Amino acid sequence: MSLRSSPLPPAGVSPDRLVRPELLGLSGYHVADAGGLIKLDAMENPHGLPGPLREELGRIAATATMNRYPDPQAQALKTALMVAFGVPQREMLLLGNGSDELIQILAMSVARPGATVLAPEPSFSMYRLIAMWCGLRYVGVPLRADFSLDAAAFVAAIERERPALTFLAYPNNPTGNLFETDAIEAILAAAPGLVVIDEAYHAYAQTSWLDRVPSEPGLVVLRTLSKLGLAGLRIGVLIAQAQWVAEFDKLRLPYNLNVLSQLFATRLLGETALFAAQIQSILDERTRLASALGTLRGVHVYPSQANFLLFRVAHAERVFDGLRARRVLIRKLLGSHPLLADCLRVTVGTPGENDMFLDAMQELLK
Ligand SMILES: Cc1ncc(COP(=O)(O)O)c(C=O)c1O
Image (cartoon, rainbow, N blue to C red; front, side):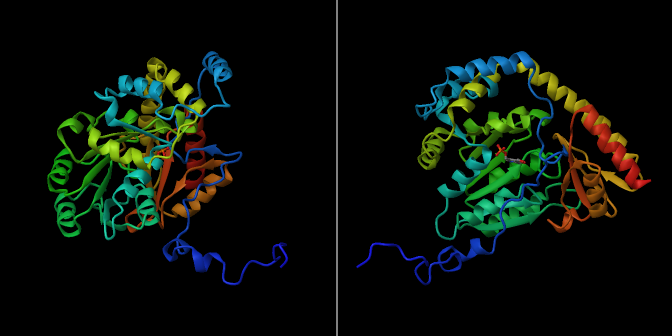
């Protein structure tokens, strides 16, 4: 018998025979190529770090032991996060490679046969995608036309679907608004499973449900350092009662936060004045951008508590393409949900980037 492998794969081995059928039908999360473009599509903080701080990070990187695995518990980073976010107990914290990973851990942890994930729509598309990856049923509950949460419809959906996991982005992406406190209270009271309040844009909204975690057994709060200004480090933070964190932690891959991310984030969380100034500049620009955009012909801008603006404009596809031709990349939402017809989303950039966006918009809409 020859040990040489056959040049052809054994008959029958192909993705369509092996991969789960629901995955074959999915398209992955699409990230546009931003090469050479003014990048206003992904809710990043446009301000980098000042030179001396970057140089200090270089020196910190030189101390990193890259031949060793990182601290699996990321203890120093957890200490810094407890201070930065006001988390009372270390055992209430779980860290992820971005909050995307934490959403995946949450979904995996409840993925019993027939379990359901519920979320308002439109909202962050990863809730639906990850639910499908984990073999969960996903049910979306439409927001009202003004993107507010219809508490009665949502509570009715909770009673009908009995979700194991309910996601509420606060503020919501891509709409930018904060859901009403009363509506969230009603959802917390009705939900038979976990309610995840995803505070990815907390830095810009400055309102939170974190203080409620100790008294709400089923409440999970998610945060991320991405929108604050450290998207490249990929650090997501989950805060829940310790009994939940102990279970979720069993699904976390060992060493999910690399050594450089841990070192840099631990150091940078001390830079409160720097980030506060950057956030203030983004909030000022959000106000300026919203009012300038609102004066353009045929543009309707939605109120935002995040670092982006959702707007509606006739011929949105043409506007998106026109912006791209002028080297400005924003996010196209039309086609992703019926409530988002003619909608585009722009991330608040630096004053210069916002001017380029506004100039391009003016030219396209005149
Ligand atoms: C509501 C919401 N949650 C989570 C994320 C993912 O953030 P991270 O970079 O921490 O994975 C995003 C990113 O756009 C988001 O909008």
